[in-house]
Length: 204
Ligand SMILES: N[C@@H](CCC(=O)N[C@@H](CS)C(=O)NCC(=O)O)C(=O)O
Image (tube, rainbow, N blue to C red; front, side, top):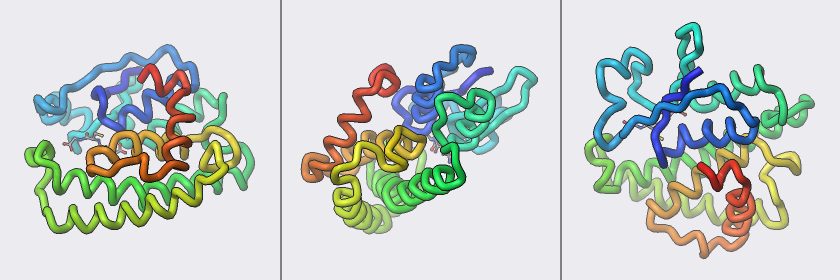
């Protein structure tokens, strides 16, 4: 198998961390330079018509797009350690937190960044006013999650799961790019530091 990735881009980084947590060794990594628009070439568009990374190419040529779809596929063929839940309640809890983090934290932070940051001008049809309002929404969410994470090592199920990958990679990448200081959120800061000390995060 081959994963199309890009250094520092948060979506493929989630897959790379997931692969490291699972100890999977048979996936080749091909890095694309998004700054040089290597994801917009005709060749890559045949693999990923939406010109996004990550994409997983199976040995028989089949392609899976979308970070979570790729991780779910990998969880099926490499079930241990489990990261999407074992019991019906765990599966529901992890999915719930994953979705909440995505919509309440990651999306407003992402729009705040993509619609206001000068570096994103060539990749996004920017709407500055929308970006600023999304950044304000993200700050409200950060205050909310600052309370949620109090006394918790993990966001869901008292164990490391895919929801933690979603939360920590998003915050590590997007908070600073929105010119927000994570030290204003000490509970989130210590949660991130704890997860980011895992070998899978340190090496990726
Ligand atoms: N929904 C997709 C989003 C993928 C995505 O937006 N990837 C970014 C890198 S983090 C990308 O390819 N950006 C290129 C662009 O915006 O042109 C997923 O979860 O895989």
